[in-house]
Length: 132
Ligand SMILES: [Zn+2]
Image (cartoon, rainbow, N blue to C red; front, side, top):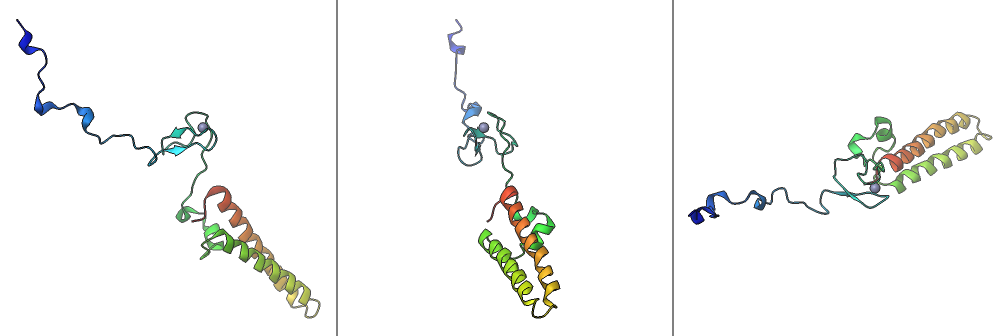
């Protein structure tokens, strides 16, 4: 008779599945695919379901140095746009005043790369990162 040795729950050897440490945590770590909506592990670069490449959310600390210099101290997209327009307005104003005092022509020229730097940096953040 071996009925005694069927199953005896030993308190010291509880089943390992109840540890709960590796419990799946929906909403906390997974990221949703923007195309198909599938849940993906956070480390993945591409969607496991459809292969869509995730937009890389680059932290502001990892922006290229030129972008960071251009957008130094600008917390938002709106303020960056404001600087673009300030530079454009400054360029147009200097250009107009250049007909009165030709010294303002080169000053107008200085506004061009400034406006361009703000605009290109703004576009870079739009495509590669996010405003936070
Ligand atoms: Zn997908």
